[in-house]
Length: 284
Image (tube, rainbow, N blue to C red; front, side):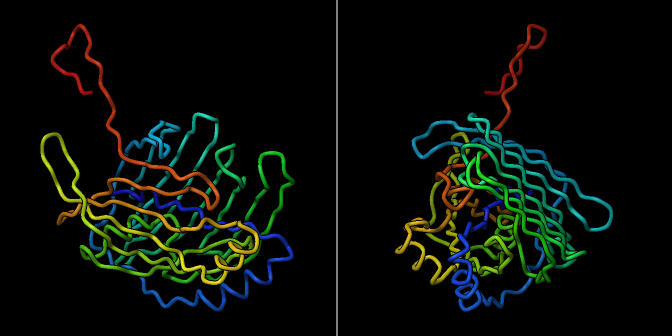
């Protein structure tokens, strides 16, 4: 299973007057002690398609994910969403899977009207270097922040669904992600199982387990939310996983960027139209 929808953009635009508050509260509330996640299911070659809908059910975009296993235990994954309004979400992740999952490099580009912040974020474990390019809206002034950061071994940007699929069924876990304020800070992300739902595959019914992803941003949410109204009232994401010995991603619901719209993203199968030469095959 590929790193599908692992791309929750932990990017927090902070005005200069608030930067000190942001850094202070993160340091107090985000000292996570998560451990690297053990590999239960090794990742391999994948090519899949996704559909992006609004909460009203309108199709607003389409997605495509590709993943290849490289030499050694390195895996490279890319997830691209193209929106009807011309917006683009392009995420690239490289990770190793030698006993435990380890993030090697990451890049996320989001631009267009679907994203309040136009961002280009990249970091690399080997060099420790990171670069953040951002601007408010499509016409704002670009800001660039770059530097070096010692990336912990249990940081999983771009790998959240992969991590989830490798947990014992129904287990909860806390992992770390690297957030940008726009300087880099470590944030805890709690993965909490919820109620079971029913999912249908043709005429067959299967069980799906709903997970909630809750970033622990502590006093940041309380302070900014109350004082400036900059954070959603309920800052979390939902994901449905097939409850099986071999789990599988089913659906994600949440924003792709902090202040962006809530979306529903699910797998979709290509439709093959029959031809005059072969009317025996038609997948709809």
